[in-house]
Every structure is written in C-alpha cells, then in structure tokens.
Image (cartoon, rainbow, N blue to C red; front, side, top):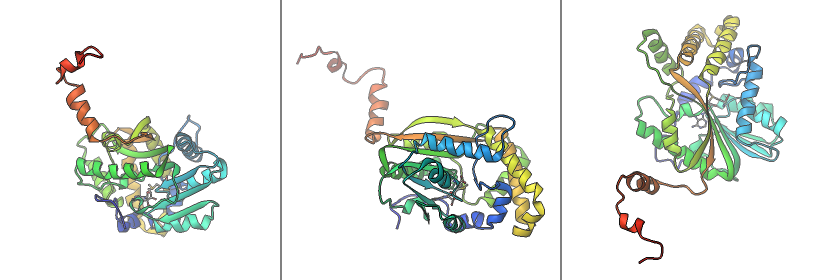
Length: 323
Ligand SMILES: C[S@@+](CC[C@H](N)C(=O)[O-])C[C@H]1O[C@@H](n2cnc3c(N)ncnc32)[C@H](O)[C@@H]1O
C-alpha cells in the first residue's frame, strides 16, 4: 500500500496502453539501445547509439555512480542504464522499477547480474538499504496528469523528492532527466492538433515546469547542475522518425497502421515542438540538503530578513555584551 496522500502518477492501465504494445515495434525506431529518452549529441558525425551512451554516461557521472554503488533506477524502461552500470561501472546492485510489465519481462530475460527489476510504482517502493544514487530518466512526465493545478503538481513532485531524499545516503545524488514546458505556446493549429494526439498516445502525461521542480525540491535538495538540451531532443526524434519510416511496413504489421501513424505524427510534431522551444529537456542533478528545511525558513526569509525595516532594529544594533 502507498503512503502517498496525493496523486500517485499515471495509472497502470494508461502506462500499459502506451508501453505494453510490442517490444519489436519500439525496437524498430528506438534502435538497439531501446533507450526511450533524449540522447546527448556531440558533433555532426555522431550516431544515435553513441549519443545514447554519452547520455547514459553523463547521467551516471552526475549521479556519482562508481564501483560498489547501490542504485535505484525509477522508470528503468528496457534497462539500458542498468546494463551499462553493471558492465562498466561495477556497481554492487541496481534496483529498477517501472510500470510496464513488458519491460520487466524484457529486462528479466536479459538476466543482468546484480540487477533486480520490478513492476512497481515509486510510491510503493520500500528500499532494503540506502541508495548511493537515484536515476529518474524521463519518468517524471508521468507524475502529473493534464488538468492538474500547479499546486497539485508540486505536491505530487514534493512527495517524490521527499521519498528520494529518505532513500539516499547522505552523499548520494538524485539525477533527473525530464521534458519540461518551455518558453513558447504559439496558437498554431497543426501543433495543437499534434499535441492533442500526443495526449492520447501518451495518456495521463503532463510535463513539469522547471520552477515546479525547484519549488517541490526546495529545502530537501540543492539543485547543483542544470542543463537544458531541447535541441538534442529534436535531433533524437529525427533519428527515431527516420528509423520508423525505413521500417514502416513491419511496424504496421506489428501494431497496425493507425497506431504506427499516430506515433509518426506525434514524433513529427515533437521535432517541431522541441526545435521551437515549446518543450525543454532538462537534465538536473540534486544533492540532498544535510537537514531538510521547511516552511519556517521560508517564512523567516520572506518576512524578516528581506524586509526594508527590520521588526526589532534595537536588538540588532545593540553592542555585543550590552543588556
Ligand atoms: C519514457 S520511459 C523511459 C524509460 C527509460 N528510463 C529510458 O531512458 O529508456 C518512462 C518510464 O517511466 C516509468 N514510470 C512512469 N511512472 C512511473 C512510476 N510512478 N513509478 C515507476 N515507474 C514509472 C514507465 O513505466 C517507463 O518505464
């Protein structure tokens, strides 16, 4: 049973509708890495596979993953990050959680040593030991649904940050890669149509604003590194789209023409959406604060320290030692 009081994120049914369709269909356009997240590109001659690996290494580096680390991967997908950690970072253990039965079956089948994978909502997770690092790669988009108020979103994210902080060792790191709402919202009918379709293809998803994540993590984590690589998502999506086009007939065989076309339209829209800055792609590194600070500190900062005239000037101007 969950301890959360607020929204628990996307339902199992909605997650299954998107993810539990056909592993082979995803493989056609995601490529052999099966990484369902933006890559990190470097130079004109780069390839999707290299850029995905660079992304993984960047995130693992930010999270401080090293030999002997114990890691939690929230929204582990098909397990690319977990494979890399075991093969190249010699971690002690990785716990991967996801809402997709299909990716659990896929990852279990890989039988990666020192990896445990479960179909579990983070809200239900009970760690057996503290983690040295927590990754959350493009799962946060599922932690709020369309129509939620900013306040309700922040409440839900704060629950996640609270839990993540409890689960981390004091020197641990939380690394989040997530799509966030960007700086533009042009009233363009084609794009709005594409976004509406995306809300059907990715049901119950609503990205955050960076400010919401900052508010939700305030007093629990210090946000120590921020990257915004939205142009990298545009390029990633162009590769996915080209992959889908080149094996379109097989994709149709696997999931039907309607679904294939819906994914194609969503990706075409998304290329534009990222290139034009409707959406951002944030890679965020959080370090736990030593002792969480709550509303009392904010009250002090907003109402006492920042005021023009301090409420007790006499006290502040008194000479040391004077009574
Ligand atoms: C876009 S996929 C990204 C997968 C993987 N991180 C990658 O980079 O390929 C999002 C993942 O988040 C998972 N997810 C979404 N909400 C979740 C939740 N509340 N608890 C655990 N996993 C969740 C989904 O099941 C899916 O595996």
